[in-house]
Image (cartoon, rainbow, N blue to C red; front, side, top):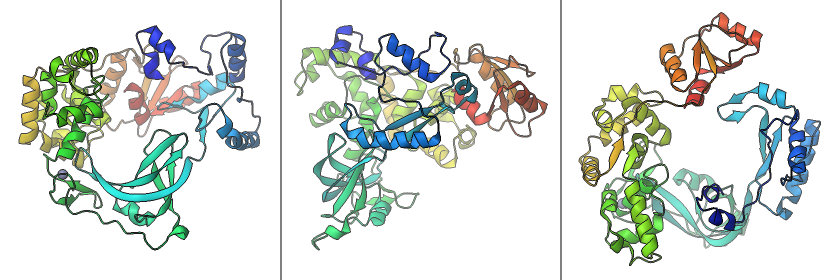
Length: 460
Ligand SMILES: [Zn+2]
């Protein structure tokens, strides 16, 4: 839905037939209760959720939960739970926010949907870091509206815990958009023809021997040139959180690899429209669009570039932390193990992985090739923004991962004010270890109190 709304052409957005229930009214029309917002929205002509209702007690909430769970399948839309919210808007605001989650509302999820089917085979999949994941190939079955034919078995420990064999009847579940998984084996339905699964000792794609990872059960294909790893790494390279190349999904990557049009990520940047047109599902228009999308992605912020490199153990958050600390690719490349470990939230294992990555000839070659292909990494200039605009912060006590001066600078760079004393005008008091009088004053004035972690999350 978000993608449809972002369409620049309103005709396309309109053709998607989106509909929504309005549930919050930001404009002040004198409403004091959340329920009044629903009533006002309805009077204004918005569609509101007819199921929503006021509950006076916890028992009322429990009754309502059971009632909706019961008629859930007959609703015209899929839901995965209820949101219970404090009705008094003033009180809701006062309760504050932990990270992104308001204290005044709580989600009650329904049990995920499940179905019974047969495990026809168990295969292994190789991820971009070489991790080997056993996957159950299922007799296709419908779960909460979609047909499912694969379910992850995570690892050998999980297979042992479930006791699943090839040929078993299993209960498969699917919650939201996540990959379906096997919940339980129905052992009563065994016929005696089931066969146990053995983890292969060789990578099914490149044939090299698989290694036990540092975590114990995790098994990896260590071959950096393994075609399966390579393919997954390319999917990752073009994904939203990395180079974000619009219209370049796994299917197109597969076609480009299979046709020999690319060998690595850097080759993407030298593709010509004429290379793309002959591919299945491509016409002149889509080829030219993709060509333009690839061109546009050449300038990339440092955090997303780090993400794209696919360094083991480095996810989006770590990539952002690294970009803020080192600012340029050059500085990050030269960073010592000690410097890396000193970055908040980066431990020894992650630091070692980053350090090793930038000293590996394979990754150095790729980075040289990307540079040569015209990829420009935009250095991090430090944070500026208006996220904390107009907010007054007071710090008390000792902070752990950041000095008080750094914290204040962060507040200022995001448009807020760092003050020394607490007053009724103070918005937040950030409390560290052994806080002083200011903590007591904050309580007296009813100022929102948060710890260091909550503050850093808010300032992110
Ligand atoms: Zn392999």
